Amino acid sequence: MKKIYLIISAIVLFFTLAGFGFYSFSKMIYNSCDCERFNIDNIELRTGINIPKIKNVDCSYNENTKTKNSSFIIDTEKVDLDDYILKNKLAKSELSELYIKLNDTESHSYKGVLDKNTGKLAIEIIYKD
Image (cartoon, rainbow, N blue to C red; front, side):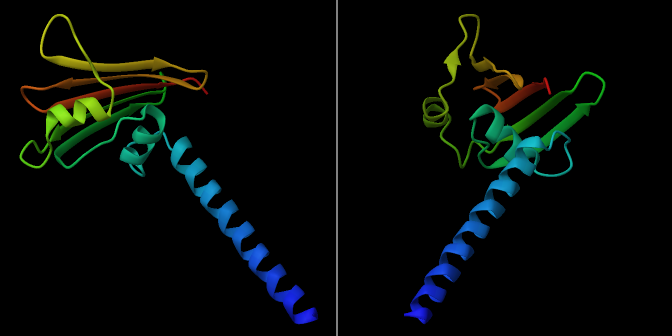
């Protein structure tokens, strides 16, 4: 009986520690504002926009304004842009072939713009905290 109790306790402890580890790791990614580490993961967590297969990325972070600007050239040979637009809930602009997603939350605001003709995805995140 004692062995069963120890085994169950060890299993519960293991899963508790693993859960806290995953939670801490996701918070570290969420709070990583610079362009060096976890750039794509941070953008995906903050905006809900999936970054697909890309050919090129350009990123800059301004510490004074707490603003990150990233642009990606999507590999349109491997990514169906019509499907990508639907899955990421991008809305068509009335002016051109641009598709936009934006939101303003307590911790940040963002704007994502996809040019369907060129496959360029530009994302701006303004961190408030």
